[in-house]
Length: 262
Image (cartoon, rainbow, N blue to C red):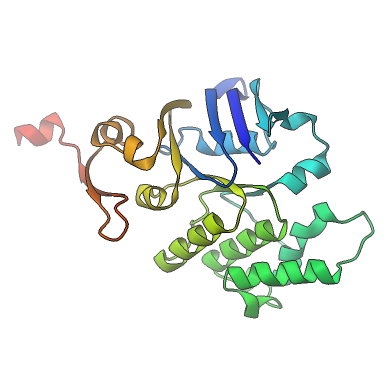
């Protein structure tokens, strides 16, 4: 399934946060949304999974307007993991992951054997099979993040929207979770903070700056020293990864006039 944003504008409290964003995440691809803090990444994603309604433009699923689909159909098509997700209730890990099955059940339906199989497989995929009976509030931030990703996988979506999915994860689990997401099948649109992870995992990246899309293409095409200086304010040295040849970035501060005069 393809997810497309066409000329999307989003206003919050009368202020334009995202302006004229057009991008596409095509079937089975891992698409990264990059940019500095406050550039509009999270807002763009919220529009993509219908938490925020665009003030202009459209979000399309396989060419059909997202806002024209019934809520259950949207929930079956798109799963989202937000950047911050809090709960005051100490659900078990198994109960949280089971919430991913709700779009596939009737109002009074109970969990079926197939539902339980899907949830168990999702927990196994994120390395938390032994945590099913643990309370979520007893987990570390990284463990909770993996539970939320398991819930999204249990939803069996065709589109997976992730906002900083590697938050709180150590480097091993960052690599494992993104590799898992990449091979799990859905089309993926993910806001990523770590540019080297984006270079390693994404098929295509889109860069936002000040709420506007300023570059799109493969990581090698987009993550250039000039763009990184202009958008992120850093000097970047781009080198090929010794194992796979993908671009890897080494960073320095950009010299200011004061630095140069010193």
